[in-house]
Length: 445
Image 1: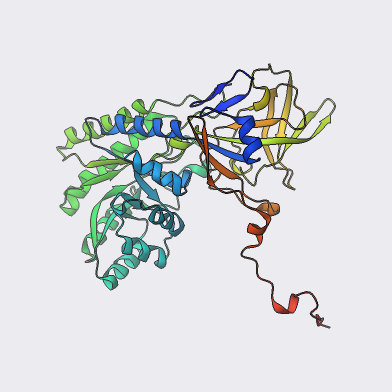
Image 2: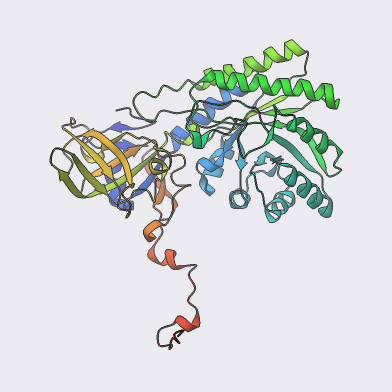
């Protein structure tokens, strides 16, 4: 078992995060409960800035799809990072948090006209154009609004990162971006340069997520620098900006061996410098977009154990009060996690159990076959490394309300997302007059 961030086992034998006893967190805020370790988030932000900006001047852009709300926007701004958004909702959150517009990068493969208008009205720093349809649409909208959009073009470099097929994005067969190997990327650059309301600033790529092999990032950087050379030769311009995306992997379970952020930075910057020297290029401004690696290990989900079912000789199921509604990742792509019994974290493991959720699905399993102390109804289970893509992917399946999110730091816990109530679940429901109680229903014969 690996403890993350500010975690420790206190004198009571309880798991503690950010100086706050998790048993007290469960008692005070209920379960399921997302717990975010503020000090750990800030530490990783600072490590990224030190690794990528000291002596190289790279811009670190937080990929907000990993975990996004008003409080997170404020933390990211305070730590000096920029912000990557992929929808009108994420952009609106950033606007409401008063995040500096010049430090917002707007991504997405099917941005809607109203989303692009919002981005243009707010004067976001860059819009990352994903396809020819969007390029034309954005140029037309910018013309109508009397502005000029500063854009990056998302390219697909043909680099296949070794990760789950659902989170690979850099290979040729991808829904994202203009493909490099078949010449489409160069065609996109030339087209962009002819459009009067777009200002071409640079290129972007993203090869996938949860990547451990640093050679994948090194290779992608070299491919993109080759593209920059080709753009200089074929389009006659020097590319100012190179955004190399994110995807840096983190620890989830024993056996995971992520590199250090410094090693990640070395893989990227060494490739850029090598290609600059090889082709006598200007050094472009480098950007990276970490998301999971900033918040993943900083997040923990607390659950309360309910029913326990043992099938002799087969398996013991321990059911908790959450599940795939608050963490769909195991069902979606077989994500794996570690966990402890938070109220007896110092006790040795004596049995193997499987932790299941309460959703009405056989596939609602959080962890298969984990060794724990003898689990009892009422125990608090803490599942580690749930800070990325858990809250943001949560849902109301079976009409379950989304859990609250608390930010812990130095013994203090602040609610940054309220728990959804039953009334919240009905907030957008509408009942037609003909279905109201007391109304006669005329049956179709």
